[in-house]
Image (tube, rainbow, N blue to C red; front, side, top):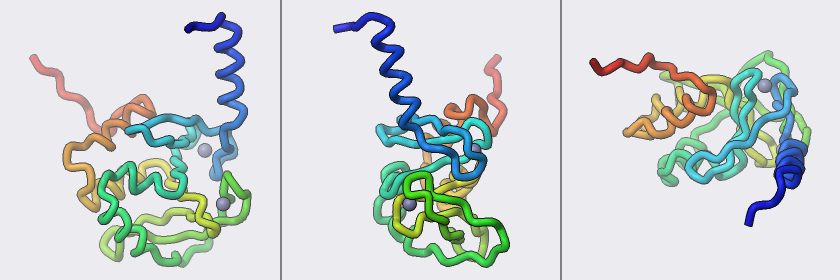
Length: 155
Ligand SMILES: [Zn+2]
Ligand SMILES: [Zn+2]
């Protein structure tokens, strides 16, 4: 059953209204479904918010993702704390991925989720050889309407 256009518009506006604000630049984030996982991303700054448990789902390897999350440690930084888009409390800065190529992300102290600045999530995915078929990377690239790699034309 298809409703009249105005009903669809109201539904879309309702969707937009319950969107969270970006913890980095305060613009409303867009919700997008990726592998049936709801990912909130900010078009303005390119950051990505993952609710608790979504990183594991996104990476598709729960055991590996769990050990990656278990390796998070408090980061030494003078950066201003960001605020969780769900509970609005200051998040903690944590480093992910060990000493070789650490990525500093923000984590809600109450466990609501993780914030990745632009390119940090693809970097984590690449560094830890998740995503051997580059599915996540491609999806993330599509999400932002551009690709990090130039596509070769087949002549
Ligand atoms: Zn933003
Ligand atoms: Zn929170």
